[in-house]
Image 1: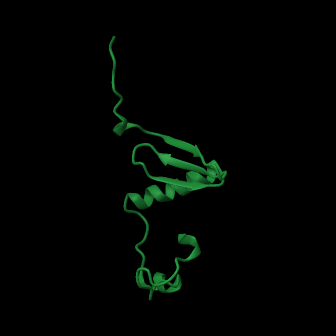
Image 2: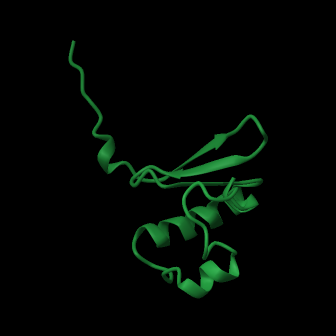
Length: 86
């Protein structure tokens, strides 16, 4: 009996994972990059943004961004993480 192994490094497409909390994770099979949201549509939008950033797109975070987000004077372990990072 013959058997074959599948080379998953060339796999393409998106895998949807339905999480226990009701959210949906969309994972790009080629890169392994993933993102989640409440719906498949929004998860795909978030995945597209994550893939763009993964490929070097987007704009770098500036000192002004850190100041706006209240992260400019935080040392590691100095303060509690902002809600969006928890």
